[in-house]
Image (cartoon, rainbow, N blue to C red; front, side):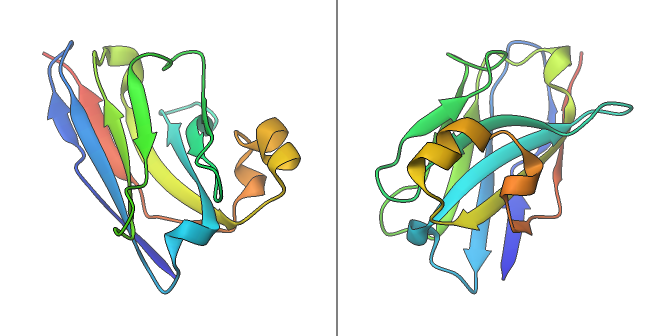
Length: 129
């Protein structure tokens, strides 16, 4: 199983970026997908999740209304669209997956890193002038 990131980089405050997480060795349709981030000196933080079956989405309060997670049909890739970025969003971003967890469990534990079994290598996002 491999999860390959792309789309990170440097962006000015107020700008947008889209992160991609391309999977190989698994069919993402059967997996819940989480996006996490980790800033220097801070713990890894769950920012968004999309469930396996129904595509239910979950977001951290800090990104609601600005970030959108998606998993388009027919693509074995997940995306995190990030808008209205600020310096507080600077971090390494990771995607992670877990095979079809029970919906009730995912609703409670989606933001916990221990919920997920496979992780990408991370992509740096820097928001700065």
